[in-house]
Length: 329
Image 1 (cartoon, one colour):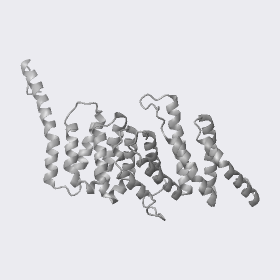
Image 2: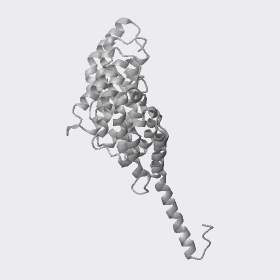
Image 3: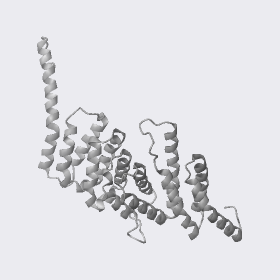
Image 4: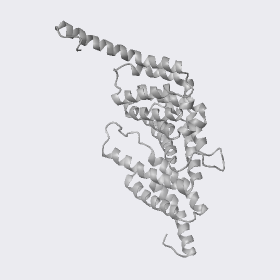
C-alpha cells in the first residue's frame, strides 16, 4: 500500500504471488495459532484490495484460493458441542464471524468470483450429500456462505453467465432435498436461506412445497436448538408467499392442528404462539375461499372451546359440591 513507484509495486506484487501458496498453506493449518496469524495477514490484504481503485487480474485470481481457505475454516468441527458450549466453542463462533466479514469483503471486490466459488462448492457437497463421509459441517458451511452473500449481492443482480448466479445457486439448494438433512445446523441454515431469499420463492414457485414441508417438519418436531427460530422464520416466509399459499392450506393445517390443540410435548409456550400466528397467516392466504377459511378456523377453535368449557364445568362442579354460588364461578 505504501509503495509509490510502479516498479516497486510490481516487485512487491510478484513477491506476494510467490508467497501466496505458503500463506494459504499456513492459513489452512490445524494449528490455531499459525492459522489465525496468517488469516490476519489475508484479511489485511483483502482490505487493501477493497480500498484499491483497480484490482489487477492476477490479484483477482488469488481470491479463489483464499475462498477455499475460508470454506475450510468456516466448517464446524465434528466435536463441536452445541448444547454445552465452552471457551473453545465460543472462540470458534467469534472466529466464524470474522471469516464471514472477510467473505463479504471479497464479494465486494469480485462478486462473480465469489458466486462462482460458492455455487461450485454447493454442487460438490450436493453430489455427495448422503454419503457417510460427508460431515454436517461441510453441508452447513456452503449454506452459510450462500446466506451471507445475500447481504452483498442482490438476487436479481445481472450476471454474465445466467448459469452462474445467485438464482442458479438458490435453485440448486431448493431443489436438492438438503432441507431433509438430519443435523439441526443444516436445517437452520436452509430455513434461514428460505427466509432471506423469500423473493426467490415468489419468482420460482415450484420450490414452495419443499420449503414448506421442511418448515412444518422442523417447527412441529424438530430439534429444540433450531425450532424457536424456525417458527419465527416460518411466519415471515408465509407472509412473503401468501399470494401462493391457497393450494397448500389444507395440507399445512392438517400438519399444524395436532400441535395447536395440545399442551403436551416439549414445545415452548412462545413456539406454540408462533404456530397459532402461522395458522392465522395461512388462513388469510390470498385467494382462499371464505367458506374454506371458516371451515379451517373452526377446526382450530372448536377443540379450544371444548377444553375451556370442560375447565369451566369442573370449577362449577367444585363450587356446587362445596355449597358455593355456582353463578359467580
